[in-house]
Image 1 (cartoon, rainbow, N blue to C red):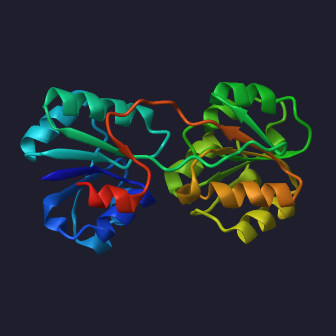
Image 2 (image 1 turned 60 degrees about the horizontal axis):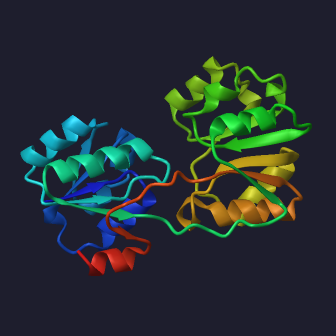
Length: 245
């Protein structure tokens, strides 16, 4: 059995193209991620696994190979999977989205969310935060919180988390991405956004469309750089991954 660490569009693309779906088992961290895989008739398990739990999962499901298609910023998941695979003496393969070239005067790169929070607090004008819901609490005590808009998934628990952090409903943009260039541009104009905070999520995550829309709107892109992880085996294109497994 091949274990797909999923929950991303990359994982859905892989499952859709893989011919022997009966040999796959996919794990997702959320039920929502699992629901998006229902159309592919593949076995899905929704669970957040520790490294020890991963080892037990490998034994239980008789896993022979792990293919990690988790989000580029899901560092702990990838690190745990590498350790568990090594301990169980099975192959670990990583799919990593290609990094876009972001050397541009309209972009500024930071290496942690904390750095971004410190920078953002001293800015004038409206700011769109597109880091997801996991980091909302880090922004809640900023003196300019009224100028921050948070684009998150339209899920009740995420919206509640934003409201619990003191974010007003008018500052919550609950929408499912990735977004087109036109949609990003319209949103930046509508909210009069001067700065946009986002991850370097690659083409799959809509990074190019966000950066180009920001540039067209004279909005500065504040980018959170990807974590640097050394993988034993990594592919950057789904087709290459399919050919080599």
